[in-house]
Amino acid sequence: MLITSLFMVLVAYLLGSITSALPIAKLFNLPDPRTQGSNNAGATNIYRLGGKRPALLVLCADILKGTVPVYVGFYLGLTPLALGFVALGACLGHMYPVYFQFQGGKGVATALGCFLPLGFDFVGILITLWIIIYRIFRWSSLAALVTVGVAPSLAYWLQPDFTYPVAMLSGLIVFQHRSNILRLVQGTEPKT
Image (cartoon, rainbow, N blue to C red):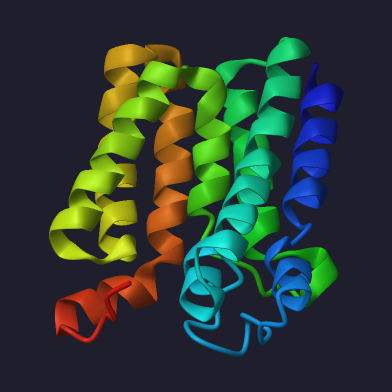
């Protein structure tokens, strides 16, 4: 099972490295999101650069990059910890894609996709929380940080076997948002 787990982590990383934001930006005649806006190849920056339609396409593609390898891992009978590493692989691929000079996104949508196999109740609560925080404060970064901050406790309550994997993934997302955290503290984070 160790070989299968390692193979799935590699597959997840390679799948996560497929950066949907770049071809979608090109399709909609938008600038390279890695050099414009927040310099981030993710759905939020695509939204800022081109609006709802291209952002929704990027969001769906990024969610699938997390969902597919974790579902396959479930099907193969991987342990919760191994599934956590598969999820980390998908998110690391999204954040540091081998195909695009290791310049990717923040990993929020991909992490959401990784959480989908844990159940729609789990993901539904996280999405609802993200929407509430975003509507109140209008910062997608703050909404993401609060949501991933709550995710491990929610996992402990709804899916206790997945508490540590969810905590690992949440820690990675917080780490990836370190510049956003600094801007939030300084009051310079742009509202979305």
